[in-house]
Amino acid sequence: MFSRILIANRGEIALRIIRAARALEIETVCVYSEADRGAPWLQLADKTVCIGKGPSADSYLRIDRIISAAEMTDAEAIHPGYGFLAENAHFAEVCRDCHIEFIGPSPEAMAKLGDKISCKRLAREAGTPVFPGTDGEIEELEEAIEMADIIGYPVIVKASAGGGGKGMRVAHNVASLRTAVTAAQQEAVASFGNGAVYLEKFLENARHVEVQVLGDKHGNAVHLYNRDCTSQRRHQKLIEEGPAPGIDPSIRDTVCESAAALIRKAEYSGAATVEFLMNDKQEFFMLEVNTRVQVEHPVSEMITGVDIVKESIRVAAGEELSWKQQDIRLLGHAIECRINAEDPDNNFMPQPGLIETWQLPGGPGVRVESHVRAGYRIPPNYDSMIGKLIVVGRDREEAIVRMRCALSEMKVGPIATTIPLHQRLMNHHAFVSAAFDIHWVERLLEN
Ligand code: MV4
Image 1 (cartoon, rainbow, N blue to C red):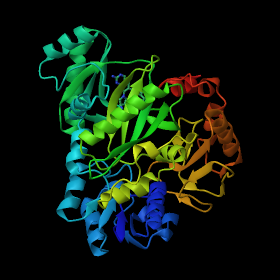
Image 2 (spheres, rainbow, N blue to C red):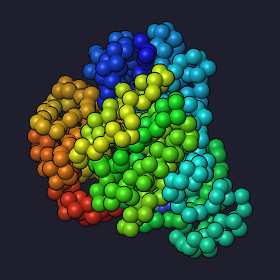
Image 3 (spheres, rainbow, N blue to C red):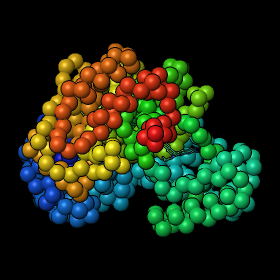
Image 4 (cartoon, helix red, strand yellow):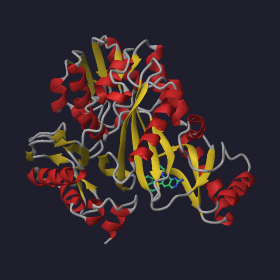
């Protein structure tokens, strides 16, 4: 096992990684920016290194400075957390060149799954369900038109290097398809330096269901069941829960096993998430694979008892996964609400500044993941998530009631947060009956 690792991140995930390292008796080095000087999580690190100014481009994205910090402090491995450099295959490669273990997949596995066209090809081979569409890159406009004729409109053109909604164009007929292909190609070149686009069937009114997976360097891969992340606004998830409600156990297990098969095929080590859209007939189609630990990983931890961050460090050190698939059982139902310093009544305007009131909920089945405390000043430079509230119950009904109770106990001020919005959503019949789709929150906010 490693004796010291460096954490190339900040906020709640830096704190989560510190805790996992301590559970493995590993020392931690935290790099930080000037905007994070004196931040609470840094007090729990064994060493801290300032790597630059507040803007991420001057600090948390500076590969050279992060590598230097690891070398200066004799850190044997780097955990990237999520965001920043977590899905940067070049960074993973620089780590390898410098004989520092990247806590995550190999650059090859990251690249194979990060490129949507090669990921989809691998998924087909692994038996993971994908959308009907072009086999690979659209080379000629005519190929796209032929495929759209076969699968039927509407179709969507997506950038192979894209993700999170960037570089996508929907077409409802052949005329709009012509412009969609050209526009998507141009946007893909401009945004990603890679103009490869592909076409697939466009699904409306879907639910976003994803599968948490873990792989090791010995060819083992397991899944930790699924999560529903349908409640989003502008591609920002608000609520995640697991297991995804309203799915027959046999369908669920087949899809989850196909996700594990995909990362086994990719020779993937570490934590990953295989994203799907699901229609109202419980048909699944893979969207993309996230090659990192995700914000919502506690949902899967609470329903399985697996410490995902700890496992990701163990497998990076070359150990085998400490769980076999048959030992991973569903222990209940978990829900996570993201607590953001944003004003839902004012177009989700970020709310940097001093937190004076910070009162946390508790009791059975309540977990808070946060780096914040009273007296903490939220810097303006980073994303606005200040904490995650996670509850687990024996079933979905108990989890919803526990979440309502926990939300009403939680007091944050004077800044506005997403807590009142979560209270509204937790009481909404569409959430309670899980009769929602990827647009329901935005539709609700419009009224
Ligand atoms: C789709 C889709 C419908 N059909 N692909 C958006 C982000 C990126 N991960 C993929 N996205 C979508 N891909 C097909 N074939 C609809 C979306 C989509 C979406 C997906 C998940 C969660 C929220 C979304 C909001 C708008 C569009």
